[in-house]
Length: 466
Ligand SMILES: *Cc1c(COP(=O)(O)O)cnc(C)c1O
Image 1: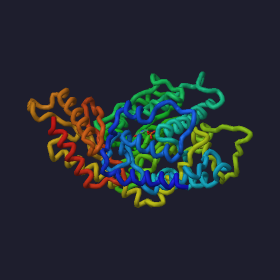
Image 2: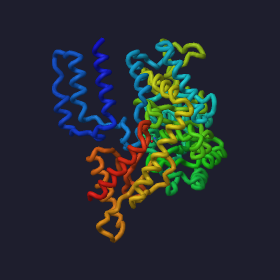
Image 3: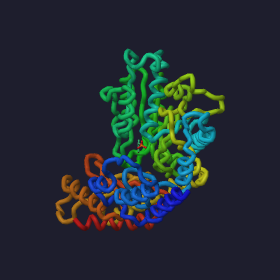
Image 4: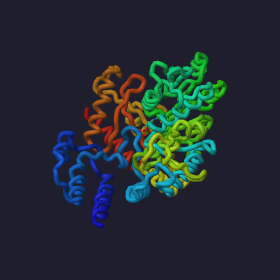
């Protein structure tokens, strides 16, 4: 089968070139459209020629997000062993919807779910669903929450829907990720119903403010907290938050921990998410910090019955299987699914508990190194670098009348644009406490100290160039 061998060689050549490639894309949308597009011909083409042309024409539009100097958004790479397992998953073409469709995929999902619950220090017996990412993990967890709090209030949302249901109080931190709002919207909760709890300077929900907010809630309540702010990396004070939530009769605590929850897998960082296990549900990603290929998210629920009830679908041909025969679609909103468990399995088996902790610790140490390098050159580091995120702000040296806000904003954005164009590394911008910031996330297994030093130099050169 030379097609797959040849394709593996193309993939290997890409990976070999990854560390030294220009990190950002090098083609415009119009150029890519011209190279890849055109009408779909009546007659097909030779598969080898299609793959060769795809690899050649897509190349300038590829971003080296898997490489060691991509610091944009919060983006992990892919461990080689996880790519290898994903290749097998694609070749096997297993459907992870139901046990009968792939006992191997079902059993591996079950194993991986147990490992992740254990690694993250979550309650034994929690149910786990494999979803596309933290967005759908948030949707799934909050669907379980909606089901549970309404059931406790005597309302069956699965049968009777939301119209006429007891109102649910929704409480989120001021710095909640956009996907929480997206999840609430999909679940039929309007944004005007959401109560927002103020956050502190690092973006953490303020527990005493939560207490005040909860006083105004008198029905079923869902509170969404966060492990790992996408800008600062800070996590909410879960121990204090959980105490407030638990003091209420009918409240559910959800934690969005797309990347930040992995701090729980590191003995040296675990204290940063203290109390996280007291929640009722958690959302996290495999494709960010665990460095498995897209798309890989995990939803974990401490109340399996609510999780299953929220996802349940029944039809005569959907054989439920025996008690030990896991049905993936019981725990996720999708039916047919790629068997994501294999890549997670290979990554976790290869790393072991120590390897996961070392991966997380190493990224955090590299983030501190980046912050130190920039700070030493006079750059303002805007956040407390508690995890893998660094926020930097650049002030133009020439106008020595200080950081006049607007000036610093424009300069910071210009530095970011120059770094992106230079291609040594890639990072994006954000607004942090109403000031423009450069946002650096270190989440890749292959990033080294040399990569950080080289990138810091490129960033400082871009700052001097303006
Ligand atoms: C990335 C992220 C998400 C969304 O995750 P996807 O994997 O893109 O669906 C949600 N919450 C937080 C805190 C994130 O960092």
